[in-house]
Image (cartoon, rainbow, N blue to C red; front, side, top):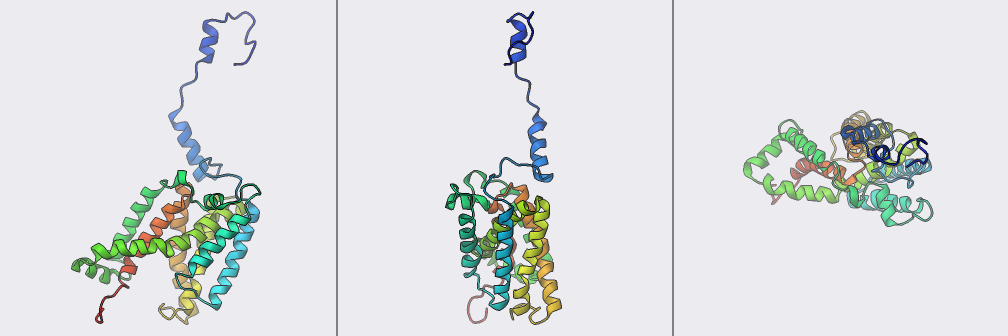
Length: 277
């Protein structure tokens, strides 16, 4: 309460009326959140002070070194836990501000914090269900997936492959690209959506060594086909996952779930039993 409102006012009804709080505007908080998420303003649901522009340069330098390594020696899914999780997590930890270095702060800086783990999960499940339905009818493995549904094998194999993806590419790729790169490029570029688009492009380029060097890819040995396969799959997927990361207010778990759902049905068709497959 400010002092000396008016010399002639009595301390009775006028002062109590002035002290009465204004009714909250129900659209005010929603508008602020939408402005923060879509317009790029400050969103107080995100941790502040952990990441700066220099971290964006460090993350980009690590990505370029890692990409060069992949062209020299493509990795297995299990090796990704070292190069896409352990090393970026170590970099995130040692580059945090002094006094805030530690595993908890490092995990917070990549989108794994306890208070935000439910944000965007509904969107992840909805988008994952829609894309899985598309894979059943229109995807490159549609016939094999439908056959597995017809025989009943899909009803237990799909949950198994989903859990496998949660521990493989669904986690490792999201940790590096959405959790490590996108968060830090956002500070470097001063725009969330711009950082998302750049990260999606880098995500596409990351698939290029596999598309060109891996004999199991149809594009093996053909630069044109490899570029088309890598960018055609990686960039749209990166845009979808990066957008979910923004909408979920930086919840990496939502991206891990969506990525795993996208990969589960095609991965299911690669599991064979017995000599006859």
